[in-house]
Image (tube, rainbow, N blue to C red; front, side):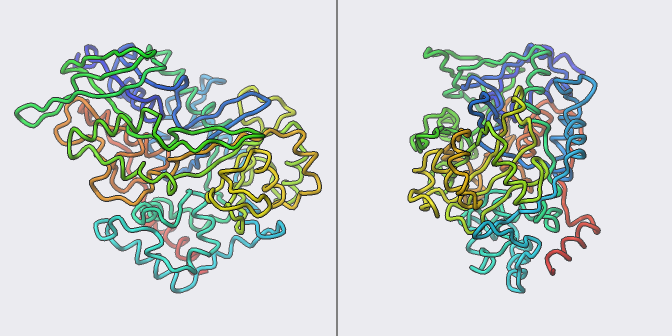
Amino acid sequence: MTDAPQQSRAYLVGGGIASLAAAAFLIRDGGFPGENIRILEELPLAGGSMDGRGEPDGYVTRGGRMLEDEAYTCLWNLLETIPTLTDGTMSVREEIREFSAKWPTDAKARLIGKDAEILDASDYGLDTRDRMELTRLLVLPEAVIGARRIEDFFSPHFLETNFWAMWRTTFAFQNWHSAIELRRYFLRFMQEFPRMHTLAGVRRTRLNQYDSIIRPLQTWLVERGVRFEHGVRVTDVDFVTEEDGTRRVRRLHLERAGQQDAYDLADTDYAFLTLGSMTADAAYGSDDTAPELIRDKRDGGWRLWETIAGKADDFGRPAAFHGNVDEAKWESFTLTMRSPLLLHRIEELSGNLPGTGALMTFKDSSWLMSIVVPHAPHFEGQPEDVYTLWGYGLFVDNEGDFVAKTMAEATGREILTELLNHLGLWDIEEQIAATTTVIPVMLPYITSQFAPRTVHDRPLVLPRGAANFAFLGQFTEIPEDVVFTVEYSVRGAMHAVYGLLGLDREIPGIYHALSDPKTAIGVLKAALA
């Protein structure tokens, strides 16, 4: 090992999982002193979109992430070396494996129809034309697909099948999203095809993913001297291009407590820049208020990328992703319950104990509402007599089936009314409402990374000639991998660190389900059933 890392400094813009992973790889694999690493974050907490917070009177998570053994090779590589907060001899990866084995996922009520009828989700409903359309999308190269949408490749019948209802709600696809991204998802997660109706491939953390992944990772970094600077917004980056085409970052411009500041970078220093944010401008409602829909990009993540993108033609086109809030938004909600009554009734309906089911999707819901009941406790310090439930709706501009408002206009209490009626539990609505707090969250950019795009809209993790900088996050281009996954952010961080430092280390390969004959046969059987 050279002395370069000992003299170098690294500035990581953004405190999400991509930056945390990059910091860990710098230390673990690059020999970087932790005290030479600064993570610059606008928000008061690290973790980015992997959040989970609150008190017993009102917990909230903005989203949920599916973890899976086969496809998440880079994430597992990272978490194998991060100890849990409760047992220093056990890695976070081991804890997830152990917890998932103890509480395996086997959804018995993946789809729910009208009058709270449990549908036969094992009947995917695909006909010959649907299978031909699926096959066509899989064999077409991305250059041919281009910026076309999912609905351009499938007939109305396919879009009404049980299969599509389960696939789209598991991964949050809208019919107008990128056909390229759907194709990548099919290729990366085809192993889930035979088990979509049970989601048996899902792996879960012991607590929410902020408490189970982010906090242990942040603790590991802090113990090694990494400095987290909160309340810092990076507003601009100065790049220089040398005669040989090499490009470097020379200065980061900051706002700190309302004051202008800057960090100057030497030739041996590095900058890792997170671009955009799927949870930017998230707004919270309450039992009595609907969350605001923020459209004017108040969060610094999008503004920074817009500023950077104007400096080079290969730094991406952020407007391709943030330019249509109405096609990117959806709304989630978290129930905090001080009575087990609702969970007992859901258990009777679904046949699943909390933590053993998966998304329960109300297929005929005008909001296309889905819910999931986690194992308790789901938050650090959660009392034994407090319970939680998470859900979301994809069609937030439709009027409810039981509430005469769109989901976007509905208060937390009205979302609860809609949910209980879909469950057929109107008889105990007042009793449940008296012991339940609902916090809805409007997310204007949550599926923006699925927007139809061209090959120029996302920059490479390591743009041409990049000598001391890399781009991180969900809006970079990693061929064949899939956005809207923790794996994508961690893989990008690994590419960034190994590439900039010139580390001769192998990056775990991207899993291709159809390359495994056994998996391919299972997929074929499920598709033809």
